[in-house]
Image (cartoon, rainbow, N blue to C red; front, side):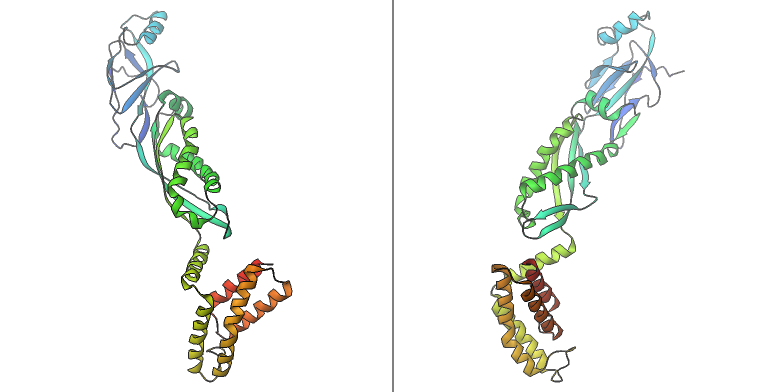
Length: 327
């Protein structure tokens, strides 16, 4: 037999419960004159025979004829007296702000960057929600669960956020180099895009924050290389400096061992040739398309410079990439 309850209330000690049914399983027997206590941060939805009859705001509610007219009509219509017990359930909804919920991309997002071509992005941040429409949220999301916590819906909300992140990135960004100055705009756009989905669930999105959008390590290395090239300024002067450094190391190793450095005579000769070669390669790769044979020949020459330790591996890879991009 269900318990006869004269006081119906719910206290959330942990603060993570969005909806709690009383009783959590089955139904309870109430009678007219029983008290329903609803806290300031709560709303209570009264159910009878599987139907929601009324939503109660904060306060102490005494179940009497004048307070619950819908329920009174139903009970008296079934032939019960005004003090007779009846079976029902009460759902308490926590109307507080559920803050600092985390979102993130489980899989990287493929982004077409105007400068770096196709790259992969990851993002993460936080958001806060609040129940806006108790009956809608209860019927559409919670159903008949006895207890519903914030963790039960977070994964679903994350999937909505990541989907809108895909769309918003393409709408507002052309390259990741513009990302720092567009964080606020991107956050606002994503928030607007997901508001409608959240409202359809009876929820209100209070804030949406992007903590970070990052690129893979190899892309980060490309960005660092580009920043370094920008900081160098005059590439021709920089290459001459690099050659001078190589010649100095070669002079310390007059044996001419290719594994340790090139001989002094070869180093001086290459010192005059290399800046012009690199500069010409950079200019050709950026200003006009190269024939396939010319491109392979220049890569071959760059490889010879690399084997003689005249240029570094990073410099070789950067020059090779620029040549191949023109094919």
